[in-house]
View: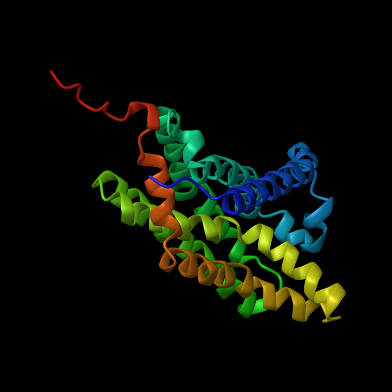
Length: 234
C-alpha cells in the first residue's frame, strides 16, 4: 500500500497542531466560567433575564465543556497511522465523540441557539448547525454499526467539519473584521452561517477527492513486515 507523501503528512500534522492549539486556547477561555460567575466574558453580552434563566445557564456550561471534549476526541481519528495499532482506543474515542455530541453538545447548542444574539438570522443559523451536526454524527455512527467503513469515514469527515465550526467562526471573524473592515454585526451574522456551511463544503470537496478513502486505507493497511514471505523451493 502507498504511504503518506511527505507533503500530505506534513500538512496533516500542521492541521492537527492548529486544532490542538485552538483546543488549548478554548480550555484557557473555558476555565474561568467553571466558577459559575455570570458577569464575565461571553455572558456579559446577555441580558440579566437571560443570565438568570436556568435552562440557558445549563445549556451554556454543558456546551462549552462538551464541545471541547468532542473536538479532542475526534482529532486522533484522523491520524490513521497513530490509531492503526490502537484500535481499542480508536473505538473508545469514537464512542466518546458520538455520545458527547448526540447527548450533550448538540442538544445544548440548540438551547444556546434560541438565546443567540443577532435575532432570527443568527438563531436559525445556529439551530441548523446543531441539527446538521447531530444528524451527520448519527449517520457516521449508524454506518459504523453496520460495518460500512468507507461511508462511515466519509461521514466522519463531514461531522468533524461541523465540530471545527467554532475554530472557523473565530478565524473568519478576525479575517472579515481586520482585513475587510466589516461592521461587527455584519461579521457576526455572516460567520454564523459561513463557519459551518463553509466547513461542510470543504469537507465534501475532500470526500469527493478521495481523502476519506485514503484515511481508511491507511488505517487498514498491513505493515510491510507482516507481508507473506516468498515460498522456498524444495
